Structures are given as C-alpha cells and as structure tokens.
Image (cartoon, rainbow, N blue to C red; front, top):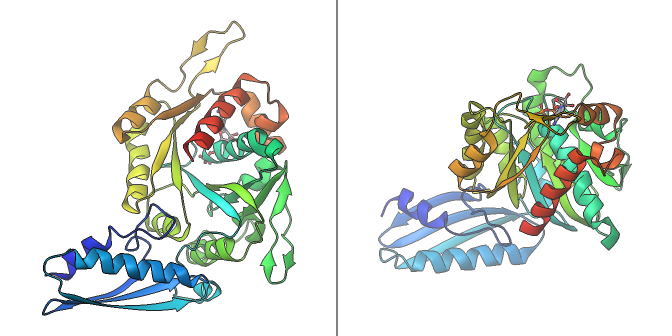
Length: 347
Ligand code: ADP
C-alpha cells in the first residue's frame, strides 16, 4: 500500500471540533508502511491533551478499516501551543480560547471592497447579537494594505498584558490588525515572511476574551502566502466577496478553490458594488450584472446578498465609522444586516 493511499485515508480524519482534516492542517509528519504495519508520526500543537488522544483514536479507527493494514503505530508529539511561534514551526489551529466561531472574508483580488465588507459585516453581526451580551472580533490579516484600522477609526499600538496582546476596541468590536504592528514604511518584501509568525501570534497570543464570532479579513489573492495563512487560522468557513462583472467570477472562483484545498467550507458569496440607486429608486448596473449569482451557482453555494455601490459606504469607511454603525437605517446598512443575519444563521 502506498504512502499516498494512507495519506488519502488520513485526509478523512477531522481535527476535533473542526470540519478540516489533519492532513490539510499539516499535522502528519511521517507515514511508513511495511508488511501490513502503518507507522504514522503526528505533531499536535495544543495545550489540551484530549485533542491528541482523540486524533490518535480517530487515525487508528480509520486505518484499521483499510484491508491492507493489519497493525498501526501512531506516534504523537505534543507541543504546547506557545511553542508554535518558534521559527520554522507551523502552528496548528487549536481553537482560540473563548472564541466560538472564526469566519474569513476572502476575495480573488484587491479592490472589490473586501475590507469594507469585513468591517461592516463585523459591525452588523454585533448590532444583531450585542443585546444578548455576545461580542464580535475583527482580525485584519491584509498585510499589503491593512485598511481596517482606518475603516474602524482606530490606530496606535495595542497594549501588552501578561505577555498577551490586548485587542483595540472600536464600535464595540475587538480589533487586531497587521496595521497596528507594521508601519507604513515597512517594505512589503519583509511582510511576507513576517505574516505567518504574526498571524500565529494573533491566534495564540491575543487576549480576545469571550467572543461569539471573529471575522477575519484575509489578504487578497490566491498565492502561497494566502494558503499558508488560511491553514494557520481555525476557520469555520469563508465568505467570498466579488463584484458584479461576469469577468470577476473567474478570479473569485480561484479564491474559493484555494479555500477548498484546505477544506474550509464556503459559506456563500457576497456581491459588492452591485448597483447605484438613484433618488427615484431606479438602479444603474455600473459594473455589469450577475457576477455574484454566477459565482455562487458555480461554487454550489448561496448568494448571501448584494451591497449597492453607495458613496456613503465609502465616506463612512473613510471617517472610521462603518455605515452599519453610522447609519444603520440606510438601505446599504440594511443590505449588510440581511447578510449578517444569514451568516449568523449558518453557524
Ligand atoms: P479591498 O479590501 O477589496 O481592497 P476596500 O474595502 O479597501 O477593498 O475598498 C476599496 C475602495 O472602494 C474603498 O475606498 C472603499 O471605501 C470603496 N468601496 C468598497 N465598497 C463600496 C461600496 N459598496 N460602495 C462605495 N464604495 C465602496
């Protein structure tokens, strides 16, 4: 039996509590197969030993079902979560203490309004659940142009307490951003290598507190940097943001395929800049029509909603108060609210 066949079997073993598998999370370190005996090396980064035990049991159960396998030896090495930050050590998601769901907002390319969408989604979700005492976080991983601090009206450096970073709060949302840590003149070539380690810290070393949802603003694009980033974050699912022109669907689908490679479920597609509404209520489809629906259909997921092209969305973002906070009654804010409602319902 080939190592590849065993690896395929291991790819059906889920990380406890997640929909993603242990292979895509990078836990499998070695696979040997000789005379019916499968010897598997696993490295688990977690402070919770029951996670390792569960993974070991699940691997055992999966492999013994294979007719070619007569015995198994599963060697698990456990690294406490903090060691994950050592250079060269790939962090494996352990779940963030106190945080119930982590969802990502992704796009195939920049400029589609991904950060605008992320900040408004976080605020719209908060508007819906704050009265139940539930809190929302926003994690800006856009290394190339972190715009969340500007859009949420925050700046400065976060405080450190007991070796943990305290997120900065604005509009009731707990925020962490690469923008708090790199200044504008940090050369972009340094950012790539920095990101993996920094994002691991955002996951392991930030005192998020009790949160219902963290919304993650992913960097645009579908390259290796984005892929390894997605593998570092314990994502429940992702939303793809696209613009309405049909040409954009190809790019959006590339983004979705990257997420699928890592078994992150696509929760749905949001179309941004869908139409410009005139005071008389008529709509102009400046950027074309149908891209969001087409992308959703092609991916076999739901179109979560359409956000109009609305100068007040941009103005609100530029002023640091997203429209969902500045003017929650406006048509644009209501469009964000409807999407937020659907997303909360999906979790
Ligand atoms: P991305 O994160 O995809 O690069 P941004 O969220 O930074 O995109 O948005 C790019 C620009 O477009 C910003 O100036 C933003 O204010 C503006 N923008 C985004 N969505 C809308 C919208 N629905 N209506 C008007 N302006 C928008």
